[in-house]
Structure formats: C-alpha cells, structure tokens
Amino acid sequence: MQPRAQTVRSGDGPLQGRSLAFTCALITAASVYAQEKTLDRADVLARLQQSRDGVPQLVEVSARGVDLSGIDFRGADLRGSDLKGANLAAADLEGANLDVVVASNANLSGTNLRNASLYGVVFLGADLSGADLSGALLVGNLARAMLKNARLDNLRGGANMKNQSMGLIRLRMQYAGLDGAVLKNADLSVCDARFASFIGADLEGADLSRCDLRGADFTGANLDRVNLAGARIHGATFRQIRGRDGIVGLDQAEGVDEARFD
Image (cartoon, rainbow, N blue to C red; front, side, top):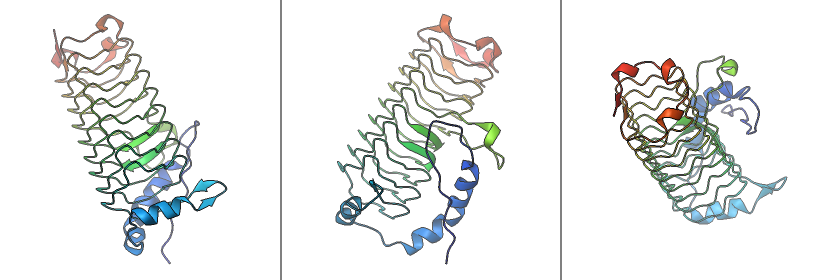
C-alpha cells in the first residue's frame, strides 16, 4: 500500500506543519495518480454529491484534460488532485481546498477562487486570466502562469520562514503575466517574481518585501504604499508608475541603481 500524503489544512494561522505535508505529497503524487482512474465530467459531478461532514470529496483524484468548466466546487476538498490541462473556466471554487493540487497548463480563466486554499500548488503555465483569488492562500509554483486582469486583493502569498524547517516554500511567479491585475494589500513577501510582468497592475498596499523582482516590469503600475524593503530589483522596470512617493522601503531594496525609473 502506498503511503498517503499528510493532511494539509487551510486556515488563517501560520503555515505550521505544511512543509512536511508538501514534501510528502510530492513524493507520493506519482504513485497516487498512477492508481487513480481518470474521472470524466460525469464522475466529478457524482463525486461532488458525496459529502463527508458536509464537504464534497475529490481528494487525490485525477481529472487530467477534463472539461470541468462552470462546475460548482464551492467548499469542496480537492487536496492532492491531478488537474493538469483541465478546463475549469468560470468554475466556482470559492472556499475550496486545493492544497498540493497540480493544474499545470489548466484553463482557470474567470474562475472564482475567493478564499480558497492553494498551498503547495503547481500551476505552471496555467491560464488564470480574470480569475478572482481575493483573500486566497496561495503558496506554490505559478511560473509562466497568465493572471492578466486577475483579482488578488488581500491575497495571502507570503512565505512563513519560521515554520519551514525542511526548506523555504514560497510563491514562485517567474515570467508570470499579471498585467492589469489587482493586488491591493496582497502579501507576496519573499516571492520569486523574476521577469514577471505587472504592467498597469494595481499593487496599492501590497507587501513585496524580500521578493526577488529582478527583471520584473512594473510599467504604469500603481505602487502606492507598496513595501519593497529587502527586495531585489536589479534590472526591474518602474517607468510611468503611480504612487512612487508612497513606496515603502525603496531605500532598503537591493539593486536600486540597476533598476529603470523615469
């Protein structure tokens, strides 16, 4: 019998115990998916009718490439599931648990992910254009993901280094596209957003402290009250930005002399 990944719980508190759960999940993911039959849309809808303590159960299922668009997943438990290449456009995942979900190259455009838990996710190249992640917990790999015009207000994406004894797990958005996205008061501290595009984005009050922003493009973005203390901004572009005078910690950022300002 293959070992199962430890439960990864969502919540408002510290990310205690999640590093171990994330590591275990990655180790066992391949064997879990290999044993699980790929579900079709009808199977998924049937599973959503099955509840445990009122929570629809889709834990560690495989729905690769399946059309799941428009489905109501509110509050569902999808931990550890394989949704690579799936179509979740306009689906409702508000408050759902998607911890350790793999959804690389999936279509999540227009998806409702408000207050969802997305700890340890792998969304490489996923399309989240116009998605709503307001208030969500998001710590995972979104390299080359598309988040154009997405809403990430009050996003909880900061890494908690005090409780990561097995190594830093942080939000990774290298080369991601966040043009026109709304990130007001989002916590992205310690994120890796090298060469990400924030053109025209609204980051008012966002925490980008200690982030790796080398080569990132903030042209035309609103950076009023953004915290850049300890951030690495070598080669980043800050042309035609709004709220420059309100930036916090710019004098404590690394590579200011190598960044591009007007």
